[in-house]
Image (cartoon, rainbow, N blue to C red; front, side):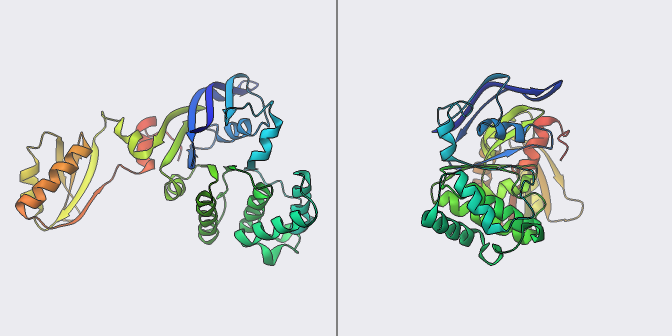
Length: 312
């Protein structure tokens, strides 16, 4: 089921085009929206949550227009990329204010604040002024605000920006837990590795357009014109090279200049190559210590798609 659909979606600010005839579908689960700064991620998220109106085309969330269907906001939690927290308030007061704006009150609101604060690890800090919070604490408070009304869909714009590795690990755990609880999560980042840790379901944005969407392997399989670099490490590396060179899917073989027991095989159809090399290993009795693709990662896919001008 698609939770978000955009058709010919465009948004511009004066002469600046943020989104340009964007078409995309986002399915249930965790979806990463990836692209360099200025790709249109924040504009797309603001359109999803009804903060701005499209100049052209349409966007729907669960089949409804977020600009006109105000009741839809009860089902969406939003974490913006900018720092909007009032520094003179203490954390608990701001959560009470946010919950009150969402229609919560009394013991229902207090129970919700306690549950969410415990989940994100903010219980010890709720009685402190926000101006004394670290970047990681502010991000966790913002996640709490997005969760206060128990939404089904979370739209998280750069929740990991500026956080250290310890905080990133905490936020990863929160997102994974929420997904297991049945929440649909749409998360943006300009750090490709962060998204790969959370999901392989991605939308790649570049200059306001969706250049690809789906799983990383699905996107990579579309790039037939680009060779797929596979690293093989073995004590029998020269014998393997002789056996592989005549394989119809092998375009070239290069020996690693640093590691004498490794070679890099450029192949045109990786799935067929992996099927055949398994048979070769079993037939010849080769001992393989490592066998992996250099091009199945998100960064490689993005660079292929934009001609290595991504800005990452």
